[in-house]
Length: 264
Image (cartoon, rainbow, N blue to C red; front, side, top):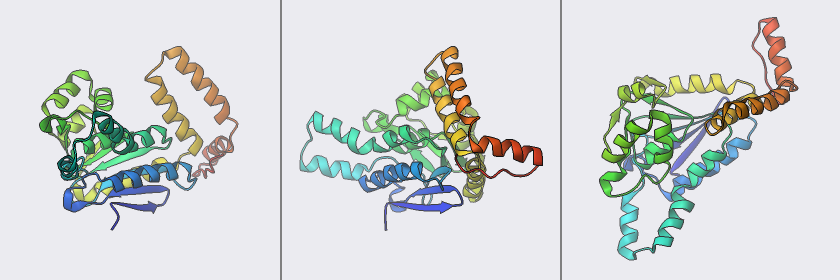
């Protein structure tokens, strides 16, 4: 049984972290398969949205500490080896996400701890079940947030609250996560995937070029001034207004019907 299960539902690709006996602790195989799945889905014209969730009663409990302890018993890695392993293994999904241009959603069921919380945070947004619990628990085991926690969390909840959560490792339940803006929606666990897939399908039905451009422009705008952002929007707008999908959207609007987009 693979550590990651993939399923395509309509135009949505679902990746299910699949180590339920270990609360979906990340293995090298899981990270390799997920990063490859993201790269493949980004090129697949039949995929409009990507959803990550966990098998069983947890989203992801973080890195596999059992594996790490066995490695340390065999031989203490050098600082360079530790750094390279983090970059090449643990951070491979974050690097794949950075290049992923389509909508990416985390459906968080149960605990998302440490690297598991980081994986949820690196998605474009999160939908939570009532059982969802988030913790940047690295501090509890003497580590630093190794998969983007220090980057993503302040951008979502603001620096003061992010530092409190990073320094304490405290858990945030689903309702508090909603209040903080960490998740967009909270649903009963039994409805989590149905509701998430409905939203993902709705988004995936949008015009593909425009979906990608909106994501690019929104993230780029976090690192630039208004004038530069508006200039970039103007350039993108000139392109999308020449696409077949733009013409189809206008025609469908006038005819009061659902548009059919082709990604060109």
